[in-house]
Image (cartoon, rainbow, N blue to C red; front, top):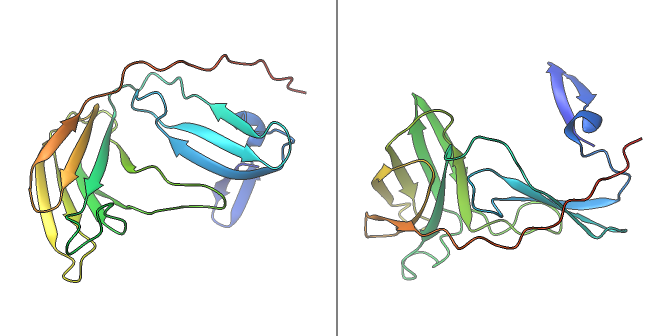
Length: 178
């Protein structure tokens, strides 16, 4: 079920409107940009059949996000940068995410942090608090929407990551909606 706050303290079930109102025994939800088009797609794992459902986001908001992959130095912090805290200032707002190894029941987080940028074109500045004993802070500049970047600890340089070639897509099904 999907719930949304209607007003303070009151929630409404909007599963029917979201398209996620299946009778499955869902166990995990994993958001990931599977097709590298800048929007988040969803995998749902179930206890019963079908074991996995894939929902591809077909919105027209291309290039309205930034994806960051972090790499710790492997000496003062772990190579995967698990625990790093990233901040981006977009249009006067500060967006914050922490890189985690897992999030939710029976699911694995993506190695990429995904930040929506809306209609803001950038470039943006990113600050990373690395997961070392000093909680060292490093700033990266010239981060543009529609791109994927690798941020390496101690380098202060953002490297653009090429998007992989087009992948085979899944054939969509037409579910029976009562």
